[in-house]
Length: 171
Ligand SMILES: [Zn+2]
View 1 (spheres, helix red, strand yellow):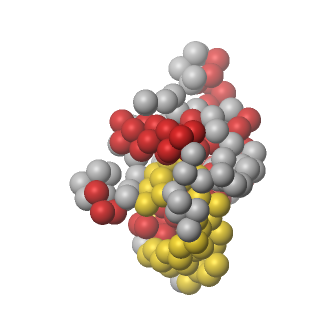
View 2 (cartoon, protein in one colour; view 1 turned 90 degrees about the horizontal axis):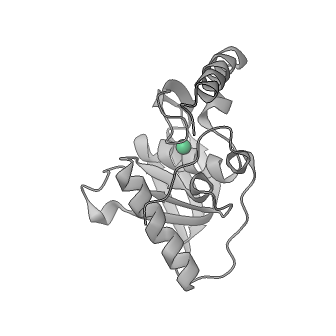
């Protein structure tokens, strides 16, 4: 089922999400299936459970946006174990539609996570995949990409969002 993607301003987006402890349950499978459907419907490269209102440490990532089934990645309870280098590139977020800003992040990342069965996995990403991993893990810690911008840029975006909220164009 395609779920509504919550937008910046919803408290759940700025809360630390809870660890997943029960694996291979019908609820977990249904949630992950909904996350994929919702992400592809929105043509995103990643989605975190809090973005559809579930404060759980789960993210789905596919930097091919559905072009290559083998590139679908589910990370549960992920932790960054190491990073290397730097990259700066435009970043956006399905919870902040219409806003894109350059964000500097590590160029390579290694993380440890659990898969859908609860097995521990180690994953490596570089460039766009590293950016996607880090963006999605941030979501699980209540951090949005605008938290990586200067206070000035962040305030400009906040003010624009407030205007959209007042105009009823942000829900
Ligand atoms: Zn996002």
